[in-house]
Image (tube, rainbow over all chains, first blue to last red; front, side, top):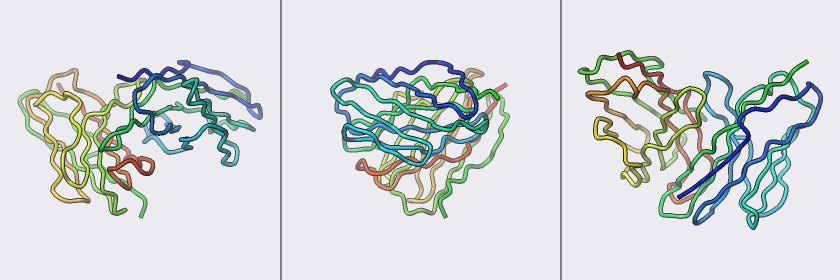
Length: 111
Length: 114
């Protein structure tokens, strides 16, 4: 089975940097995704890691350590619109792309 | 066109009703998914279709019946639902059923079962 954990809630200040952690236990790891979901909206894709290391995409970066079962999403220069849920999702090997979501982190950005 | 379109956006049904949720994508994606999301919870995988064949059923009760008429369309037929089935139902698609590419999500169908 799979177990994917994230902090439930985080608060940060506009303009600051925040790091959202995700730990996972899975059989047959085949990639980790981060999604952003605003209340009442669809999840939108942010980043993807399959090899160890850091992937940078503008204000968002994501890091993966497969040996530690650990990833983080780093958000820089926080804006009020970054207030949302951030979902870590792990894909497992198999004939079909199976993506399982973690518990999600609700981020509140304050002025 | 990078959209996944779901209809209806909102649905209210009684426990004896039969209704369907519909999902459409025109990105040429070959895998399509149904997820269920309760309030303040992450999406939970229900079904995966790969190349129009059902490849994953996450032990979903038979009152939910998926259908993939062609590579662009995915339906979820609902019958004899329970109030606890009230949730946001998200459809998603990805480029390949074999494991490539991220999932693109629709905005969901919010279902209320009375």
